[in-house]
Structure formats: structure tokens, C-alpha cells
Amino acid sequence: MATITTPVKGFNGKVVGVVFTDGVGETKDEAALAYFGRQGYTIEEGAAEAVVIPEGEPSLEWTAAQLKAYAVSKDIDLGDAKNKPDVLAKLVVVPAE
Image 1 (cartoon, one colour):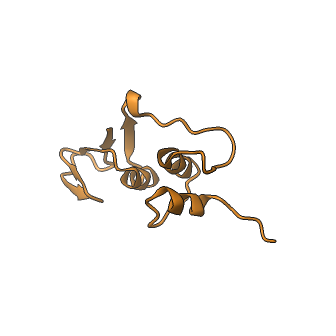
Image 2 (cartoon, helix red, strand yellow):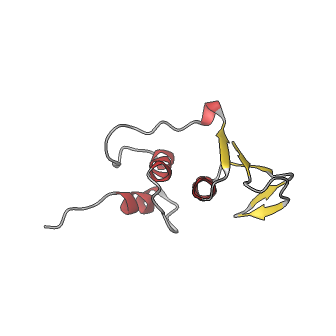
């Protein structure tokens, strides 16, 4: 579970399905975390849930969490991609024949 702090101190409300009280909310939804990262929210990951991004380019061997973390680290918008095949399709460039 990650703790998210809003850029607006003391905010109360809901953003992308996450409820914030006094500017703080929690989620493990990877898409929401990617959104918050792009929008300048502070994200504190639980140590046990930290995702290690493998070396090299994304591949079929990577988990969905690793693919999504890679996208966040490279500021790649995954759009509506939520499952592993869709996320991988957004990240892997297939060379033209």
C-alpha cells in the first residue's frame, strides 16, 4: 500500500478513486499511482511492496507491476492500458520489417 500526499495541503475529497483526508490517501492501484506521480503528488511506497525494475528494456518476463513502474519512471502515459499485454504493447517498440 502506498501513501499519497496531495500538492494541496489539507485537501479532502476523491481523486481517481482514492479518498483523501487532510491531504493524505492510500492506494495500491498502479494506474492511480502513475497518475499521482505525473501530477506532482508525493508517493511513499511500503518497503515490502517496492517494485524493482529489471535492467534493460521491458519484456514478456517482466511482471505487470514492473512494467507499470517502468512506465512511471520514464514518464510514459499508458492511457487505458491496465493488464500486462496492453501495458507491454504500449512500452515495446516492434521494429518495422
